[in-house]
Length: 276
Length: 276
Image (cartoon, rainbow over all chains, first blue to last red):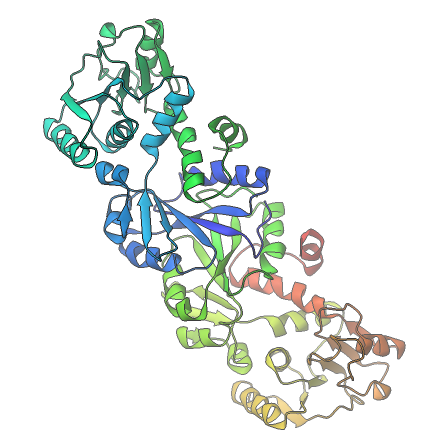
């Protein structure tokens, strides 16, 4: 990787930085593709973030910023324009400066999920989807499914208040989507997503009743620590098509590349060159 | 070069960035030596510099900053503690944060020059030196020669006021060194330095009367665009030992590495792995 005076930076801002994955995915791709850009880890504590963000966008060779913990929520108040996905998720992980000088924010976790299933041949538009888990990632996926035109979006979380709040945010930002109350019963849905952390640990009780999964349901997972979780294994055993958690990760990178107006590529290629 | 969440940054701050050489010298060395650090170009215009400098030192993984045009002079007012070399040169190109939270500034252009001649076997201490050119680089070299214990430092510049000002700054910071008025006549000096830009262009009139160079005088050059300038060629023809301009560049890097508390190496090794 040749870094020189023409290198553009994508500031990767968070703290702690030690487990940052983005530099290990983007930079090998940039090098391999001859793109003179670099995702640069910048360890920024909470108390310095607001001022740092403003200042880093005063640099001439900063093309954008990837925002991660603990700033994904607090960054919202520092932006001029945010996307519906950001408003629904209540979190933002990509910031760029517009030609108008304003700071724009977006987030593509949900977009990565949707791109992944679509590229696996599952057309989201017009389908009935169940999202279990109304936290950050569930909210993001629900927003992107709404944006992609599902005919019905069923939401379920053991925390009913959090589930209702997500339903309200979706309604406010995607007024045309039909929202319903889901349960742990996946039967009758075209697409079912586990957006809970259940499945990260061996022996976790599953958030979804796999015994009621239809064989023609497409099943997606967000847990990344295990490739084929118990939930996905059960779904596969019932004949379902599936998407693993890290697909969401790699599928969202092309969306960020496009957002930063950099030459994009496929998730497969990114996975292939990645050091992560 | 593997950039990950443990990578430490040396912020290379200036504008424009296009001709930055430091990333091309330091980074290949870091990669080759397995040092997880990176000189990162940060294009910062004059109006944003003061605030940016303060903010970049609020990051957790910034080990220091290299400061270049147009901020080498203005940075002085932003620092808490500066070295005698900085005070004499009136310029600073390395900043780090102390354990006390204060910002410290130093500059090693002159140190690079002195290290180079010393490593070529010329002991500076106790010698009579003539520095021609009282600009930024001449001031830096004069300061380092004073710090290295020359017995006499003769200064000459066609701009007498600038020469007198340099003499005053040296006296103030190195009260023990004997300063004298030099001329373009190098005879009788142990060390003679061209610290003017004369020699960058073919046919430049030389700043020093080479016909009066003694064969046992050590002759140094700061012009970097040509390796063996007309001045050095004439000095060599008279039997003088010489130092080329880029030696000053490569010899100063170990000083910066030490300043930033990074594993250091030789100028030769840096030149060998450099992409500059």
